Length: 416
Ligand code: FES
Ligand SMILES: [Fe+2]
Image (cartoon, rainbow, N blue to C red):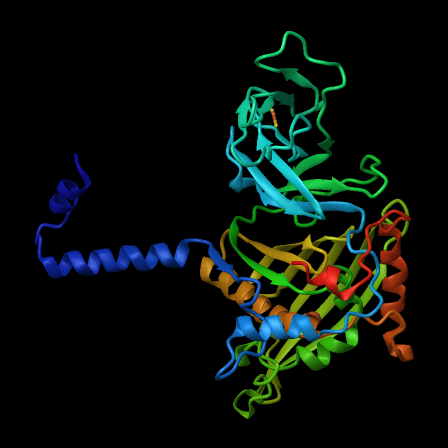
């Protein structure tokens, strides 16, 4: 029975008004239940556009006039997100530019993800643009050479009698964790020295996906995790009600002073064998008109795993538990793609998880506005209470090697 007949049968009145109400209810439930997707472009957040000057123009001016400071290397060693698993169907190929590399990412006919250099060693065509999956191989769109996604060996040249032994493409170590496709990047080309845990290892309970946010931030990658060790900024930048918005010029609005966030934080690095991890314990309370409402208390345990991934376990006394997975990928030396994915306890209404992600997003965007304009200070002027920042810099330095790529001039950083 067609849907229309079924509805006609189910709606005896067949009154057009009833149809409109029914469709409205269906639409609203779909909107309420579907995961949130907040995708912000590179100029959209963290720039002070105003009358006569668009955000894009403000972004261009800020980038051009910015003093960068003495930056650490721009691409640390570790695991980085390239794509969401859902963006790569079986047999699909994608080109991803990140970490100063061009990757061709594909899912072979067995469903396994492979990551290879995008440029074909024959004549340099980009395998991620028009390449085809053939069994376990990727086939170049230019002359049809086929490369195995696991060994990198060329297994077929359609017009040649023999495939030379040395015909190979570079294969990058990759894995799929928590719905993300990750690549292992190391300046010395060595194999992975640690693994990325799945989110269930931090929060072992069924938590469906409830939404994601995407931002592009003009900052050195190290400044983003350093924010976790900079505990003093929480009680200043993030004390204003998240509802007062992310624009630093307006968040002091007197209208919202009745609503305050209060934070207590403690950051420390982990010991061997997890020295590539660090942990931030956060206590967050809200006061309304100076009165504390304990049902809104939040405890966060944030595990930083390597230079680019964070698992934030959220625990509310009444609203339940969930986890936010944050990934930071340098798509250019000073342009980080930051994705937050939220998973929340099954029996909690979807809109609550979406609201939590929106609140987190609003606080994150305040950091973005700071990051987009700040200078990196290699010798910051710190007080005793800022001690965790120095400890974080020592901890993060393990992800750099002698050969880690650096940028040395303003021009190089502005090439994007
Ligand atoms: S460039 Fe790839 S097969 Fe020729
Ligand atoms: Fe922050």
